[in-house]
Image 1 (tube, rainbow, N blue to C red):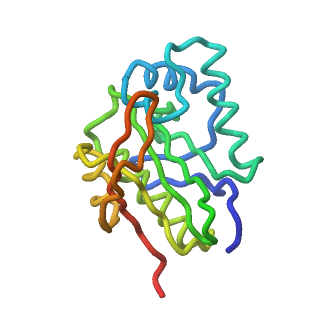
Image 2: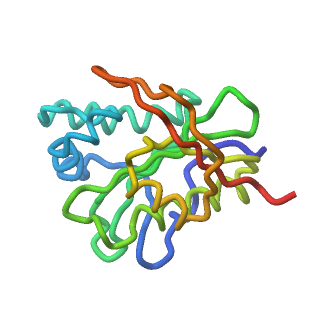
Length: 181
């Protein structure tokens, strides 16, 4: 495995761009904080403040520095404006990473999440040398399941009461893509 690093050049398919976070992305973090499901399952701050938004972006930078994974802003190629996040989080098993993503409400419905998930997982499997990229999704999150299937992930099963939130637990459906043999 070559190791995680920022992709050079940035990853794009012409419709979706994945790039490093910058402090110019605070508006994206602010909008994400207004969607109750994003802060519930991520470190997006709610309620939002500029200081909390800066802290969120600094945590995204630190993921790579700390060896935890790689977080990228999902952006519009034409404007460079961030509209979401896609992240790889290294698992304890060698060659395995989890993938996560979110898109702000105003940018949903255009396929950005599926394209970002495919771009990052393609790169991780081919360029980084990961053997497996997996995602854990709540069983009632049909939209996220559609994102993963569109990005080439296969559903492997359900882990009962696996996900822990502040006030509840939930089953997780496991999806994965694996490197070709």
